[in-house]
Image 1 (cartoon, rainbow, N blue to C red):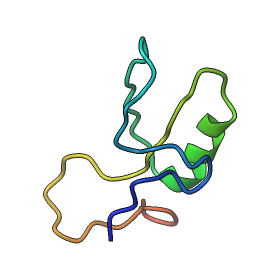
Image 2: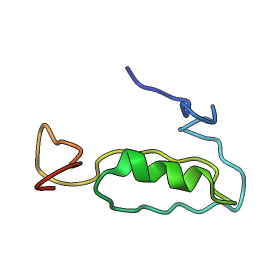
Image 3: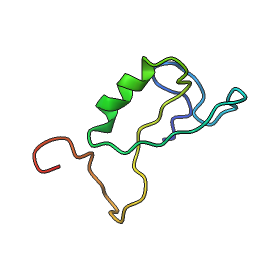
Image 4: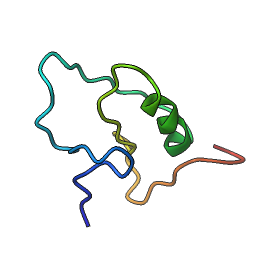
Length: 67
């Protein structure tokens, strides 16, 4: 299943996006929890949590001991 709308604000994850927006990519551990902080910031249009890069075929989120 491919979610094409943000679950919180309902905006399209695939665009189109307003002109003059820029993309920022952040690396963080427990990213679904941290993503919530960006929803409250002025100027943030859309957020999406996920994995980038790496070699694992079945990655875990990494929240907890040892992450």
